[in-house]
Length: 219
Image (cartoon, rainbow, N blue to C red):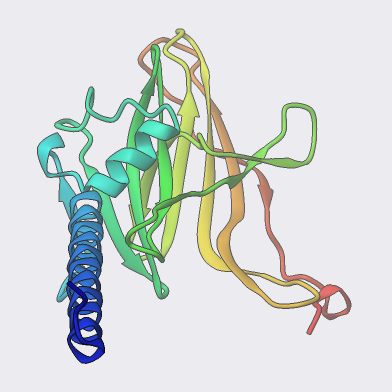
């Protein structure tokens, strides 16, 4: 039996509407799942009303920071109770200092939290083995000197007697042809040697920054 053209048209329209509704529901569900996945990957990191805070419980470390640390081979859980993760807001920058164990050695890693969902591991200027400066992600044990507005990074060995080297950094900007980029700027390098085990000598400055001549500052 043939159906009248008007009824057949109504049936086709109804089937089309049902298909569209089903597809839209599926898309909405997919979008909801994506948003849920995003919430599961990222934790909030709030600096509201504070410029510094610490986390010493590995279970409370924001998931995105834990992932960034693991991807940089940083074993932060081994020492987090003694050396908590230090969150700092200074000079319009948000940072996380994470102490990492590398075998028997250890150093802080510095993570830039400009994008709170994607912490970025920073490289800091560091004395090269022979001469000049290079960069490193392992500058040593870092202490934030808030009153002075500088970071001090000390590195050495457990061998006795031994020497230590200390780099002092400030947050600044590096001049460039296109734009200036916020970064860690090394302002002083010091060393000290332990002539007797358990007895440290005074720090000796081996290099200190001086103001650049105006001719080398690009504007």
